Amino acid sequence: MPQILDEVCEKAARRRIPLTVHLDLTWRCNAHCIHCYLPDHGAGEMATAQVLRLIEELAGAGTLFLLISGGEALLRPDLFEIIERARALSFAVVLKTNGTLIDDQAAGRLAGLNLYRLDVSLYSHRAEVHDAITRLPGSWRRSVRAIQRLTAAGLKVRVVNVLMKANTGDAAALHGLAGSFGASYTLDPTVTPRLDGDRTVTSLGLDLDELRSAFSEPFLAGVIRDLCEADGLPQAVRDGLLCSASHYSCYVSPWGELFPCIQLPLSCGNVCEPGFKQAWGSQEMEAIRALRLNDLEDCRGCALLATCTRCPGLALMEGDLAGKSTLDCLKATALATVIS
Image 1 (cartoon, rainbow, N blue to C red):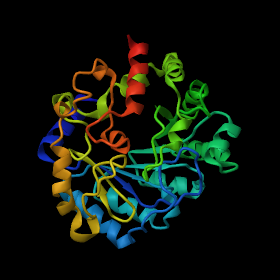
Image 2: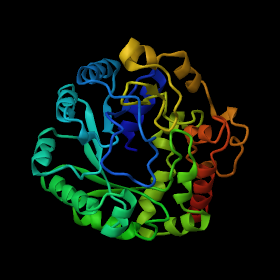
Image 3: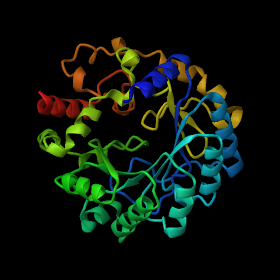
Image 4: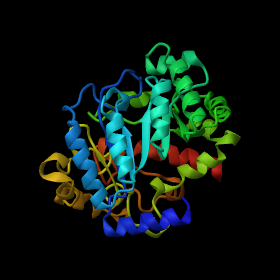
């Protein structure tokens, strides 16, 4: 993390400023990814006016980074209106998409909005592997074409890959493919449980030996360093806090429910009624903020802390917010072996 951003994050954490907000506009999606953590349906969607009012509140609260996602956000016909308003209020907007709905016209409109970055999901350099993961025939071709359109239009694009058994061994080639398009690349080594508590999807993830092998890839050296950075949390506050969730980041669901993080599904109120400010300052959010590393009996003396990016949400999905996350323990063990 650049020093200036590190300092900004530190001040935001100490002052309870929601610097980064993840907003899902919809849970609807045209793909049916095998590893998706979203339940089959949500509880509706905010109307355009409600989203625009939320954006105004976030501007007043000091939010800088706005991650807009889904589902597939381009299924919302008001997406461009929402982004236009966010940009008018000087948000640094990141749009996460599978890219399949981005044609030349959409790429041109996005280019005119001067987005901070577009994250496009791509799971392999091989069309048949990617399409088997998305369960959407032709999605690889459409996503790749979108990346080409977006980079050609001058947009900053990042290819986002989730590492799993179905695409293990493809990461290096996909990294090279992203570079050939002028896009950056990042990799998530964790297949997370569904938000409804279903953990069967985690069987798609890699075991310890597979993770060690994947992390040993030379091209992943920079990514490995990033994985050891605990959620981008500034060093000045990292030692005591569990992660950035509730301190300077949060998640808003399509129907306006506020959570510390999308992977920490503890409702802290609704941004539609009574509003974002009240939900951000709720007792539920303060209870999450009060947790410290020393409260974690299983973790505070662990020898793997240097490589651990323990997620409280993943721990909660295993039954104990203050307990272990076996998925993070697995990743930390693999990382420790590779960087030792």
